[in-house]
Length: 65
Image (cartoon, rainbow, N blue to C red):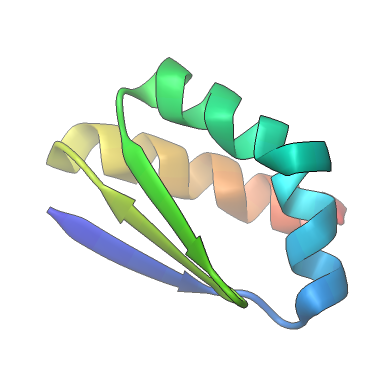
């Protein structure tokens, strides 16, 4: 399954991704996903349940940012 998340702007993307994309790496490993960052788009690939759980986390993180 694939899910695309559209970020608001580059500053939001930088805050979410972390230094050298370290936050994305942790989320990939923790949720057993493949995450691709393209500009302000985030593409999640993996099992449906893993993507749903990660999407909830991204929603919470983006609300915090």
